[in-house]
Length: 146
Image: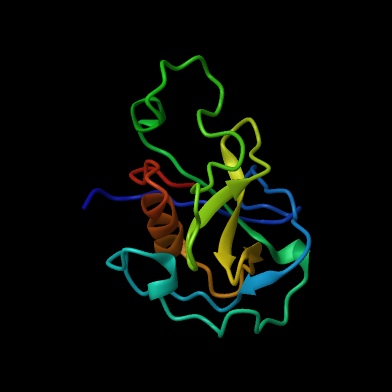
């Protein structure tokens, strides 16, 4: 696998110079701990039971999915984030992911679907491998995840 440069953001404070916008409502996942990039889905990594968390929305995690963004999005470039907006599956199932409140640098809050509703993911234990898995699960570039 190619090496990755993963940047994980927490609401408001950020990692590097990017940040994600804190969410609201349900916080579904906490303690997401991926020990490799092998899992196909983020929910396959260790995590607390859905809904079991000790977080506030200032700890919501975000990712910047990177690589060949134009090719992955089927777009023609132009400098803007090609997946701005939800990008949610039409009929989401438990464990599906989407991006919300994307910023111009394509850094977005990461959300997970569970029990009929979208909710946020707490940054506790969320690591670089988790960022790569999340981007790959959504079909977005994952060779330069920030």
